[in-house]
Amino acid sequence: MLGVPRILWGAIFGSTFVFVFMMLVVHPENPGPPPPMLPPMFALVALTTAVMSFVVPRVQYRQAVARVKLDTIEEMADAGSDVLPYRSGPKRRVFAKPDEARRKAFLLFQTPFILSLALSESIALFGFVLGFMGFASWIAYPFFGVSWVLFALRFPTEDKVLRPFEAGTGAYFPS
Image 1 (tube, rainbow, N blue to C red):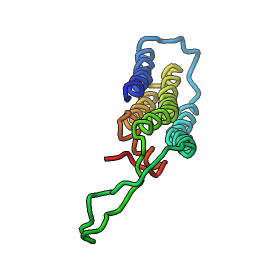
Image 2: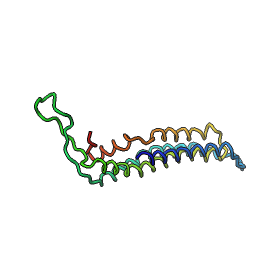
Image 3: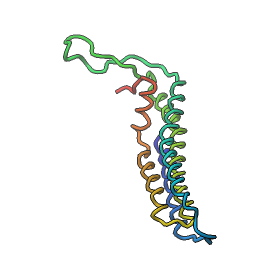
Image 4: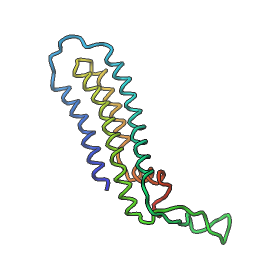
């Protein structure tokens, strides 16, 4: 089930390398010196975008998970209690239909995931614009670096899909 998120991740991440390639190959005519205030302004907007790439998807995801209604049952957290022999150990809520819950977790993961990738890519676009406007590469490339770090943090794994779903629903996938 990680195939689609990983393809999306790779495609959007790969597009940032296309921007770098275009900066290296295409040399537009520069009408004059670029405005010196653009890099600090873009840096401020990029920083805000980086923060929002975590906040907005998380808020959207929490709202979506809060609307989910799945059947749960109680399960023993472990076989017994070392502290209280001959008694039941702690119980925890688990999904009654784990396959259905798993499908729902992957479905709800996609929208905030795509949103976080788009916001991460936009930071690379700031660097692309600066490079295309004639700013030095040492000014433009850090935007790409920040974008790539954000992409690395967002590589989709099963844990990144299922753990937030468990936390949001208060139920776990059975052992």
